[in-house]
Structures are given as structure tokens and as C-alpha cells.
Image (cartoon, rainbow, N blue to C red; front, side, top):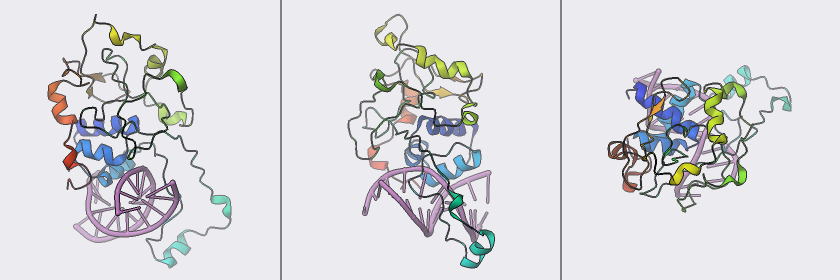
Length: 221
DNA sequence: CCCTGATTCGC
DNA sequence: GCGAATCAGG
């Protein structure tokens, strides 16, 4: 696997979007294992794990005993689950666009919307993202500040300060919101080209972003 | 069974 | 460094 700068950027973006590892893998045409492995190596913030942090019967019991002289229950990990649910489960048409394709404002990065969504990824089928719902527009402070530092503060605040009323404004044409560059870095920007009607991306990026439902799952490799 | 993410370890 | 295999919870 050749981890180009482009691919890594997309991985980081999608990861921050809160998409599942499998979903990211589908969009990148790689396995979820590759996604998780790479994310781990990149030091991306861990997602709320469905399993306990303590489980490693991989080594021999001897090694485990030697290396892990666990004394008490003091080892507690306390995940403090952010509960960030993916916006994914992509119907063919809606797919996993960045969480906030405001249709006209490339200024607001899709990255910075840690909005808690209470919807299981795999089972829910209603494809409408609840981005527009101001019900819970409260930034979840569960993530450590150290991890959020990858993005400039103003970039984080911008979407929160924006009333999302620009949707219907025809003044600026819709713009492809395919991310270019690393989110949080000065050079980060969106494609901006004219998107396919009904899609958040231009035709070029649509071809990349949307995958056939048939090919879903990890049978890529 | 399906999904999920984390870790390990041979390459 | 990479990622398949594996683990483990929902």
C-alpha cells in the first residue's frame, strides 16, 4: 500500500469526521485493518472502543505475567466515550460526504463537527444527516484539547458561529467540498469546483468518493 | 450472524 | 511501516 500524502490526508479527515474504520476503508479502497493500523501509527485520536482496553492474550501467559505485573484494579482506563456516531451508512446517493456539506460555503470545513449523533451506523438507513438540526449544537468537550490542537481555533469555531443560513443563497454557486490538504494546516482547502447536482462533490471527486454498494465490506483486498 | 475498534506480530 | 489475523464488546 502506498500511503501518499493525499491518502493520508483523506484518512485523517474521514477519521476526524467520525466515520467508522470500515467506512473509511471503503472510501479509500483499503481494509479497515489498514485504516486502524495506519491511524494508530499516525497517532490519530482513538475512537470509543467497543471493547475493554485490557485484553491481550496474544502472548504467552508467561510473557503476559512477566510484562504485566498487574497489582490491583487501579489500572482502570476510563474511556470517557465521546459517543461520536458516524453520519455514514451511505445510501448510494448520499454517501459519506463530509458531515457538513453546506452546499455553498467551502469555508466551513467538515472537520470540526464533533456533534453527537445517536444513530448506529450499520442499522440506521435514513440517510439524512442531522447537520442542520441545531438541537444539540454543543461541542462535545470529551476530546482532550491536546488532540484538537491540530486545527486552528478559529477554524473550529467558525462553523459554530455560522447560522447555516447560506444554504439557499444563490449568490455563490455550490462548491465541491472535497478536502485538499491536511485539515488544520494553512494550505487546507476544498476543491471548490462545480458539484454534480444533488451531490456535494464535483463529478471528478464523485467518482472517487462514491463506491458501489456491491463492493462494500472488506472484500476489497 | 452482523457490526465495531485495538492489538499483535510476521512480513 | 504495513496490515492480516485475531480479539472482544454490542
